[in-house]
Length: 182
Image 1: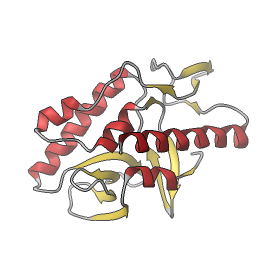
Image 2 (image 1 turned 90 degrees about the vertical axis):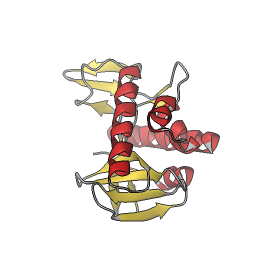
Image 3 (image 1 turned 180 degrees about the vertical axis):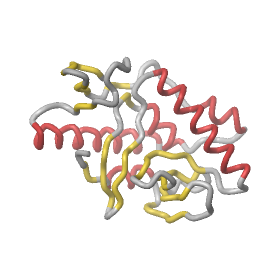
Image 4 (image 1 turned 135 degrees about the horizontal axis):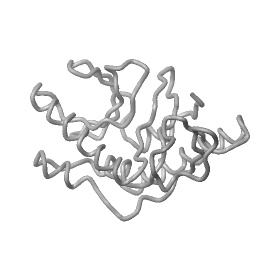
């Protein structure tokens, strides 16, 4: 599942960056990421950065998250967060628009792990199935997550038991995404 997820993420990222080139004639551009160090930054323009995804180095995993909660993390989620450095990418699956969460730098990876731990602790406190978020939606309380027990990708409303299965696996989810420029 690790390799399938890594390849599906790379495929989506390539198509997303190509969509930027085809639509706007340049690499992905972000004002939100301006001034934040990353191996992804290839140029700046005013107060914006042009970026390209880069391999995640050095090798890492979500062991700290697993250890903090004494659980095993879905290999697909491990691959999702440790395959590459990249900015968030807008996408659509069906009628659902989302921002695919990505890790911008090693510092961002540390923050992401802390956020995943906080998310899992909230799920535990609410006596809910553990999930690991992978994307946000336009609604602040709705996130796209991977169920840590089944590997299914779901849409869930934070703080409630409301959830909807989207697809059976993270590689399947990534392969169905359509690039969007936000």
